[in-house]
Image (tube, rainbow, N blue to C red; front, side, top):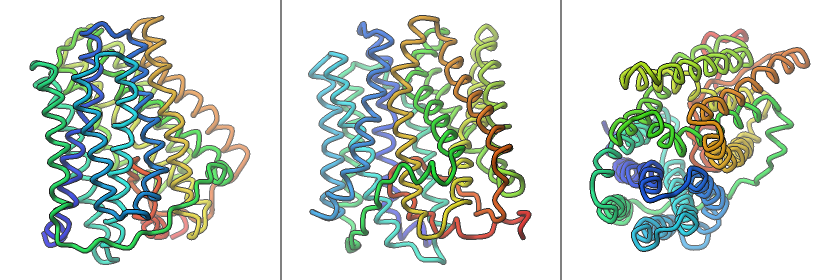
Length: 415
């Protein structure tokens, strides 16, 4: 409880920011489709968000170094709010794509500030509790944001976007009025994408598969839901079920990843993801309840892949490489996430809604094939790091978990 109180301002800002930004993607998709946007144009909006996310991850540490944490947070949040309000002034897919770049900048920049602030405040004694609460608050708000979609879709467009903008404005208050001193700005990590591939090509492939899955489902999932007959509130539950299933699966996935060869864990998770994709497509004629349950199953099989892949990469890294390796993995995730929504929406236009899960399945089949090849070409590492449920938020998040990765996992072969 003391941990929660001491970080209350940061956690409240996280929750409000996630409620504001997390609802934008589905709302854009449903509003755009209702207004005549094509499926490819909806996919363009999702890709634009991740372009902004990539730029924000790169810019935020530099802006913090120039103006400090609080002013940087206010700048990025204001940019996101401007993007939300401007949705009601311009109804064009290309104008909205520019505005979604602003929303991506807001998310990456604001999370970079929050995570830098957390890193400066946690101690070895409070790190575990603080990071656990951080993930619970973030995931809980992400699920709630999806569930809000039904209510937002039923009101006038300007009202819906203004509600999200108001939540974004409210995210400013906790950090702006906190009495905590701003921490010193840590050095921005060097971005070396080749480092991740040098340490583990399989981990890079896993991160790309996770990016294709996450970005396609989050940004184009509402198109799929509408095509198979879900209402707006059911689409919100459909997306929230994926997040919830993924969150619950982190614990058994971590247990397996700490006790067995992580390459086999990645392979079997991907095989299960392909199966979940097939079940989800087959369930389209079995009623709404079946579709929602299969979404949770799909989340449970696909969501942990990023964290397992990241843990596998860190098995081959030294302690002083951890922050830069985490940034490199996030770079590859951003690359995959930028491309996926546009490709997926084009495939849906050409082949129908089931193409969403066909494309995701293809990414996981390639991961299985490459994983089997890597098992034949290299032995498993002699020493493994502890499994870490890694948020896919910023290039700097690795600082929060770098010490956790140096722990020996319980039940590992090298205990």
